[in-house]
Structures are given as structure tokens and as C-alpha cells.
Image (cartoon, rainbow, N blue to C red; front, top):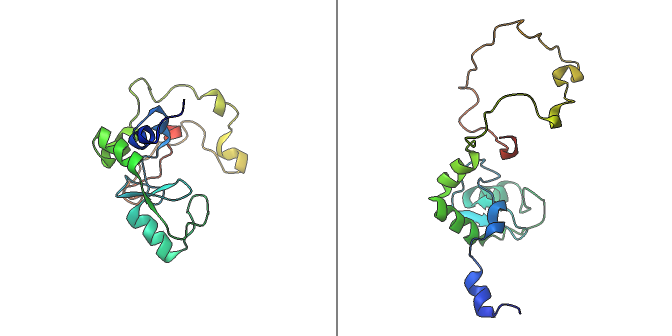
Length: 152
């Protein structure tokens, strides 16, 4: 039968298998959470970043544009998940870690088999070996880069 109110209350913040969809980074800062908060529409942000968004732009959710009226809730499930792995910085690092079994190279996947690269957009494409690769200068890009974990 259905759980009693007492059981539901006790298990409300328990981390389960379905919590893998909890985010590991603030959508606005693109970094580890700092004091995460939850919007009514279910999106997570660091408190200082979402507060700035509400002050400087509007009170709509930056992800789905639903009106929040600036209302935020605590994020106990996300906090519990971070605490279980050693904090928000650790949660962020674990999410970006590349698995050991991934050699990171080899042939492109079938998903990209039809990809033609820059020439599809009229950009000149250098022939393989035509020029020596240059060392990238990382100083201009800053420390954080936007990383989509689906591409890792």
C-alpha cells in the first residue's frame, strides 16, 4: 500500500538511484555550486548567481523562462549528494572526470560519420600535414570553459 506520511517525510531527502539527473554545476557560473538553490520549475543555481540574475535582468528562470517571482527554495537533495562525495567542488570534479576505459581517441563514432567539417560552411580547410600545428595560447580563454559532459 501507499507509504505512511511519516515514511514519506523521513525518505523525502534520501538519495536514490533516480538522483543521477541532479546537476553538478551552476548553469549561470558554469562552475561548482556555492549555496545551491532550487527554483519552483526545478532548476538549480548558486544563490549569488541567481540573485544577481533576478536583480539585473528579470525574475524568470534563466533556463526555461518560467516566472519565478524571485522565489527560491533550499536544495536538500543536491546538498546531500554533494556531502556524500565530499562537497560541491568534488561533485564538480567527479562529473568532469574522464573514465579510465576511454582512450579518448580512435575512429569517430557513427554519430559523426556524416560530418564534413568546416568546408560544409564554405570555410577553407587545411589539408592534413599542410601546416605545423601551433601551441595553443590558453591565457586569453580564462580558467573556466563551458563543458558539456555528454561530449566527454
